[in-house]
Every structure is written in C-alpha cells, then in structure tokens.
Length: 259
Picture 1 (cartoon, rainbow, N blue to C red):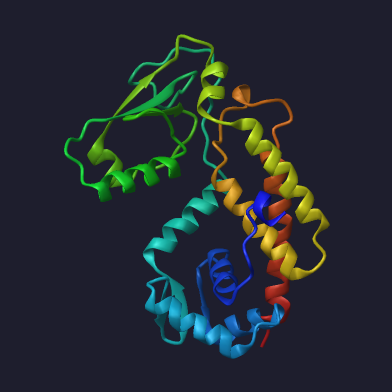
Picture 2 (picture 1 turned 60 degrees about the vertical axis):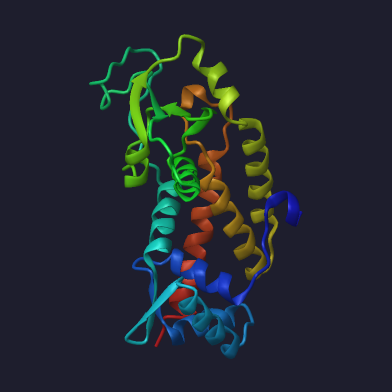
C-alpha cells in the first residue's frame, strides 16, 4: 500500500514539518514541538536533533525560542491551503471569451507560451515546477494551458519566461481535458486514500495517510465541474482531510498547547 498510495515513513522531521505546515501562523516553541513528538512516541532528543538539522538545511528559522517555516516552505503552505480551499471563478464552458474577458471566464482557456530564449537549465526547471504549481498542463514543449477557472497570482519567473493568451479550443473541451490530465488515475488514487484514512486506527497511521492525501490534493487539476467525470472525488477527499485536521487540531490544543 505504501508504494501505491505514496505513503512516506513517519520521522521526526515529517512530524515537525507537517505540524508547522498545518499551523497558522506556522511557528511553535520547541517545547510544543517536543510534545507533538510525544504523541507519536518520538523522543525529545530526536525532535531537538531534527529541529537543529532543519535549521541548518534552511527549512526552519529559530526566533526567540520558536521555530518558523522559511520563505520556501511558506510558499508550500500557501499551495497546500489553496489545494484545500481553491479560489475559483465561474466557467460555464458555453460563452465566448476574448483577451479582455478574464474575469468572466465563460469557456475560456489560459494559454502560456514560452517566449524567453537561451534559458539556463535552472530557469527551465524552476519554470516547470511553477507551471505545475499553477496547475497548467503541458500540451507540447513550450505550450501550457488549462481552463481559466482559477484565480491565483503568477510568480515572477513565469511572467519572465512566458506570454499568456486567452482562447478556446475548437474541439470538445472534454476531449482536450482527457488528453492533458489522467483524471481516472487521480480519482482512483483519491478513492484509495479516502478508504485508507477511514481505515487507519492509530494516530501515526492517520497522520501518515493524511500527509499523502494533502500531497495528492496538490495534484488535483481543479477543473470546472463540466469537464470532470461523474462522481469526481475531489470535494469528498477534501472533506475527509478537513475532519482529520479538526481532530488533530483538538489534540494539539488538549495535549500540546495546554499549560
């Protein structure tokens, strides 16, 4: 099950990181993070070693006895938050849309064409990562697109390397969607993760499965409902994760943050 569901071993680092990524603001005192470790039977010394290593690796900064996420992980937290509560706008798939119709996205697609030349390998890799975070699909090398139903800011590296257009496919948008995303594979894994979260008994097992759920939600293309297969499990999987988050939040209040 570990390989098929993308489950990762529970470690001191993963416990600290997942706890801070789920905290708003994402900072906790060392003593509280030690108590979180206690919930998973991780020794205090192991947690403190992990904290030191995470600071050295640039994952955390230590400020006045508290540990906070660095800028890179704050961006990851923002992506995770968006995957749980995406900002969408109407997309009926029927209207026409020109370049000035971005706010009324009836059927429009956003198209990104790479126009920058002589890009270093690091810039190409960073752009690919940024495009995936924007949930754009690569139609062919240098051309990315998706339905224009999401509201989000584009990072500078994307605007530096790409020109964006608004258009509509002449073919059935559902056919194009099926060519760009493997929706059946995403849905199948979502159903399996939901079942695994329901079946998990121990806190450690639920925590591990919930982390895999969150990673899977990051890969949800967040398409308009009219382009999704019937009984799409995205909302249901989000609901299951939210219930875990609420349960874990109560546990933190009662056993970690209590005086």
